[in-house]
Each structure stands twice: as C-alpha cells, then as structure tokens.
Amino acid sequence: MTQALIGKHGEQWHEWVLSNLSRQCTPHSLFERMVARVWSQDDAAAAIDEGLAALGRSSDWRVPLPRIRVQGEAQSMVTVLGRLQRPQAVLLDNLLSQQECQALTDYALHKGLTASGVVDWATGQSVSHEARTSSSVFFNRAETPLIGAVEDRLAAVTGWPVSHGEGLQVLRYAPGQEYKPHHDWFDPARSGSATHLRRGGQRVSTTVIYLAAARAGGGTCFPNAGLELTPRTGGAVFFTNLTMDGKPDEMSLHAGTPVIEGTKIVMTYWQREGPFV
Ligand SMILES: O=C(O)CCC(=O)C(=O)O
Image (cartoon, rainbow, N blue to C red; front, side):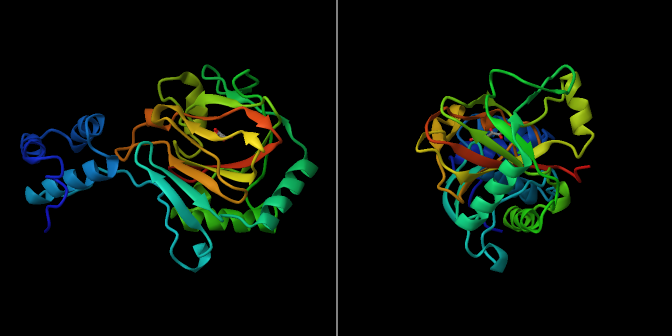
C-alpha cells in the first residue's frame, strides 16, 4: 500500500494520525480536527483510511455523498471548470443546452412563480422572509419528459439516484432580489427540522443550475470561502452540504447575491441521504 497522504503535512501529522487511531480515537474526531487545521477533506479522509489500513482496521466511517463524475456517455457534454475543497464545490459548464434552459424557463413561467419562502425553524413551515426575495416554482419529479431527462442526467453526473432528489425548483431574481447567506441542511437541533428530515434525511448536496445569468450581479457566493461564482447559462454550481463524516458543513454557507441588471433564473436541485418521499 502506498502511504502518499498520511505524511502530506509532515512526519508529526503522520505520527499523530497513527497514535490517535491506536488509542481508539474515532476517525470522526480525527477528521474534524484535521480539517480545522491544514487538511482538505479529501486528504484528511484518505490519510485516516491509510492509518486504519496500516493498523489492520476497516475503513467504514465515511458517509457516502454525491460526487461529480463527468466521464461516460450520458455526461459527455458536461465539463468541470473548477473545484473548491472547502466547501466541496464544483463549477460545471454545459450541464444543460441553451434549448433545454429556454424550455425549462418557459415551462416554469407558464406554471407560474410565487414569492419564495424559507423554512421556519420552529415550525418547519415555509414562510416569507426578507432574506429571500426571489419568486419560485417547484416541479414534480419527471413532471415532463424534459424534467425527467434532466433529473436522470443529474443522477448520472452526481452518482446519486433520482429517487433521492427533491423536485427541481426554478427561482427568478429581478434587480435587487437576492437570497442572503444560508445553509441548505436542516439543523437537527431545531424542532422544525424533524418533518423535513423524515422525508429522506439530510440534504446532502445542492446543485444550482443557471437557466439565465443576469447581466450584472446575481452570482452564487460562498462567504466563508470568499468565493462568488457566476456560471454561464446551462452551467451550474454543485456543492455538498455535509462533510465527509456526515456532519452539516458550516462552510456550505451560500447566497444568491443581489441582481444588479437583468434577470437571473436558476434551477435548484437538492439531493437527500435516502429516498425523498
Ligand atoms: O440563487 C443562487 O445563486 C443560490 C440559490 C440558493 O441558495 C438555494 O436555492 O438554496
């Protein structure tokens, strides 16, 4: 076995991982401390796995999460333009064609958009809030053949089954409208989360697909990472809402920044831990 990563940040870290695993510290506690310091999630997880293997122990502590994979026929047109380690985010191009974006926009407008809501953490109900000023509409799963095809593509690109996806939601932002920084995971400590968590567990990932970019402003921003992305029409931002050890990731804080000019139309896809019912 090659031990390429366990020593990545020096011999002290190598020894630290092995000695803590030897005295039965959990992989989860090591992971948390490593990523809080110099380690990326990928490297920390791989280094812990290497340590477990060196001690002859099995590596069954990671939770499975959606991951972008753009090889294979179904995904051949999709390209990765960039990746961020914390949060785990990927900028995608050509996820949808211009025609698909137009058809989905037309369908959403025809269905009718209403003022967007946010989850009230006490009750779990959707309520209007000054933090989110867009208008929106939900699609049912496979509501049209095109919506079904897009969900199949998202499942292929993320390696996560269609059954675990919520219905797609189209959001429209006029100038001045925005979605202030928020997390998409449900806070397990809040009473209003229970009804949401019962419907398939946590939101493990979010994909924000750009059906139409604004002329100015209107990006997707990760304030804790100091990064704002504005995919082209048909592109998307994918990110995970949980860390590799299955905890809500504070770094996944994100926002739709105010549109300055033009209209921004995006389609959000949330994927759950289990089947969404
Ligand atoms: O509009 C955006 O760029 C972000 C949308 C968003 O944060 C969400 O749907 O959760």
